[in-house]
Length: 479
Image (cartoon, rainbow, N blue to C red):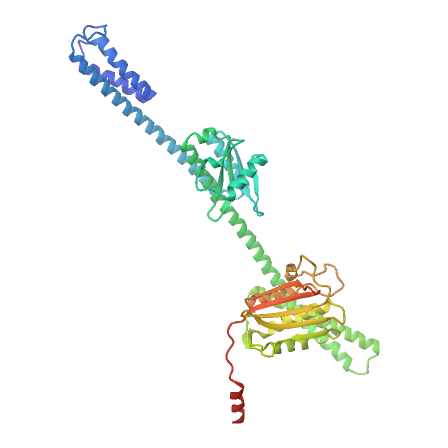
């Protein structure tokens, strides 16, 4: 072969062997192949043949160049192989991340997200996975795996103060698990743990893949959370709309017959011949019941109007005394056996509100106090301006409100006593709450320290208009 091929071509053959070794087996075999190529070339083709002795010193330079070129070519080839392998691994990770991102984008429930994460971690790392999701109460609930109490407590602590990257503090010492918070855009939605995590923590690529996976899962959980919130809101809005429509329909259908019933019962007492005492009492009771039903229907209609947003407030600056007086006149028959105490400062400034709705608030609060207090009790109405806010207080010295349910009194169809002989369906206080909110104010209920119920409504006072001085009015009157 030496007679056919010159030494330069033979060197290229040995370099080809180095390249093949580097491309197939890697760096270390390439180094070994480069050294063996020099030795074989000397042993086989350099005189004296089949001996490692070098008769011509010029071949030493050839051997050195051959070894250096072989080492360089081998290292470059092995580097290209490593880069190609890294590129393939990176492409595979990107495809896997694309796959889990696509699957998580289609998931509609937490259970589906849990299955996707479990399959992804098992496929990528061959390890077990534990996944927690934060419930409505704020506590973590395991949806994948069966973690012990120590690991769950560790995940809860990590979720409470999540870091920006994986650190040694993310490793649970006893189980050797890596725990990552599942962060969404607005909040932390849960936690993800890989158990055990030796293989995962050994490479930065594995940890980066796990961090990216946790970010995708956190975004998916947040999306599902807001889907549930939107669905619940839609159901609640639709239920409220149907309820308001039903209330409005019932109210309109009942107002006319009730008004006719009140008129007929009153006319019955005035027509001749004169009714007997028993008949007169029946007519009076019928009229009172009809008025009570009419008031209930008015409350239903008003609630439906406020709930639908169809009410436009007629806000005017006006004295509180007039509204209080008209409200007491409307409930004169109801509070006939109660003592009424009205406390309004003489220099009370004008207040801006809708007089009709404010009268409705006072009527409902006073009627409520009269129903749930015994005869002879005192009902107190007080008005004042406190810290640039108008404050209206209606209190009594009756048995008070059930403890712990003060806020629930303003819900529709909620009553102080679930089963009671006192007439009513629990709409009056709900209407007061709706009217207060329509005015941009608040109303709260509490038990007074001295006993009895206390309702406080606060509205923003603003700056009342400046009225002309009394002297100027007198001068105008004189002219």
